[in-house]
Image 1 (cartoon, rainbow over the protein chains, first blue to last red):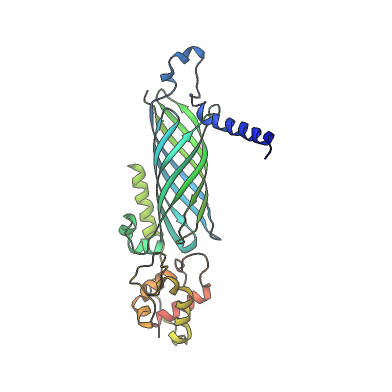
Image 2: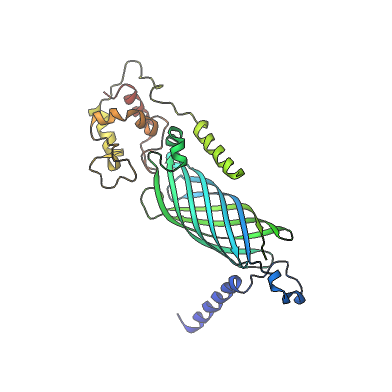
Length: 206
Length: 117
C-alpha cells in the first residue's frame, strides 16, 4: 500500500472515529451560549429500554428466523452503555425455538439528530424443537428441557437510533440495525444475519 | 413486567398452538407394514441418527447420553419421542437442513406405528 493510499485510509478512519468520539452532544444542541453548561447537554446516565423485532436467515439453507427482543441498557455520558438483551423466536429448520441471553457494550456517535451505533456482545442461545417445548414448557423456559442445544457465541450489530420525541428527561426513539450472530460450535448454524426494527425509551439523569 | 407477560404468552402459544399427532394417535396401516428393522429401521437410524445417538458417538451435539439407538430394542424404547421428532410431518430431527425426505419420514411413521417390527 503506497503512502497516498495509507493517508487516505487513515483520513477515512479518523472521520469514522470522529462520529463516535467527537460528536456525542445532543441533537437539540443549543446555541453556543448554552455550551457553558455542558452537563445539560450530556446526561451522566440514561437507562434505556428497547423492544424490537428481528428477522433474517441463518447459514442453513431454507432457514428463515424471526425473533422478538428486549434490550435494557444504561448509557453513560451519552456515548457508551453496557446492556443486557433477551430474545425469543423461531427458526424454520428443525422447527425450533430460539432463546438468547446477550450481554455487551454499545457505543454511539451522532450525525445530526441520528445516533449511529455499533455494539459487540457475548451471548448464550438455546435452540430446541417446538415438539420438545410442547412436551416440557417449564423445562424449556428455565433452560433445563430435554434436547436443548446450548450455544455460546458473539453478537455484533450496527444501526442507528432516530429520536422522534424529546421530553425534558424522556426520549422516545426508533431503531434500525443489522445484526450478525456467530456461533463456533456445530450444534446449529454458524451464523445468523438479521435485520431489526425497534422502539425504545430513555430517561436522562443529569 | 408487561414484556415478561408477553414472552410467557408467546411460550404458551408455542406450547398449545400447534398440534403434532402423537404415536398413540397414529394408526398402523391396515394390513400392517412390509418394513422391518432389518429392511428399514437399521439403515434409517444408521444414516440419520447414529452420528449423535450411538453409544459410541464422540460428537453428540447435545443428544442426551442415555438416548441411544444402537439396537432395535433401544429404538422401541424411545419410539414415542422418535415419532414426535422425526416421523411423518415432524421435522425437528435430525439436526440441520439435510434430513430424510417426506416419504421416508412417513415410512418411519408407518413402521413405528406398527410397533417397529
